[in-house]
Length: 358
Image (cartoon, rainbow, N blue to C red; front, side, top):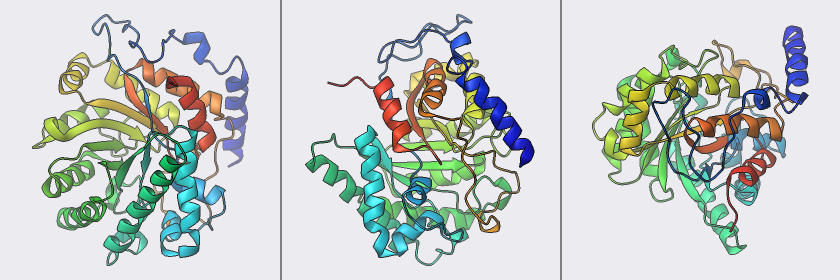
């Protein structure tokens, strides 16, 4: 941990010097317009698009504002303990009021790994219901109507491709999640997927149950920009696109719950693949990115084995995070948000930077 503190001090000094080294290599960007010309010349424009803003890290935000840190059920404590229902709704609302155009249901920890194998339907449905109530209350207060993303989380341990459930168990659990969320959500989001196989099972479960709502898939990546399984992101995307129905149902491919530096490497790999970027454009599949603000996650991560939540990186201020997001948008990213440790204040800064106010 001492070595991490030294690295943090060095990073902080770099970030605070001229708002990070991004400015030294930035390409001017005109928000809500055409993305910059690719320096290699193979992609004169990405997409003429307006950036859309996701929410931040609901679980970590719940703890920041008062939810007890329960290492067994984590953010699901806000579901199973009714005294925290209002707190959960207030967190959803805080992101909407900060500028989020999408919020994600708080059922990330409602999994067999966290002890909910027999009660997935009960608590997942409640997560959907509370998200709708929070969204509708914001509408009554005059805020735009946010869309609700139905979360399909890792069913085993997060970040661990070696801890997947069996195919049969995964398909069954994910179908139960989809059925529970369907009445409440606008789309389905399989997030923090650690490998192609995990994402494929989630996608197949969604499309086997629901026939019309959009599907988003988001992977978590390691420090070299590859998936936690070591699979290159370009190969992972191509594998996903081969699934039945992917070209019709898949509307976003994203990367989340990883260091922003790692996601930048991932996006650079994709951006440099002319054939893949052209294919995504043709299919109208957007890219997304929502990083975390945590210290690097170890390969042997196990939530229950940790006595407390991972420390956050203080150097990732609102401006620094927006600097990262600016680089992502230059590489064609359409959906921007945050994961663990990204607060409503970070989201507000993103919204002010990228979204044109009427």
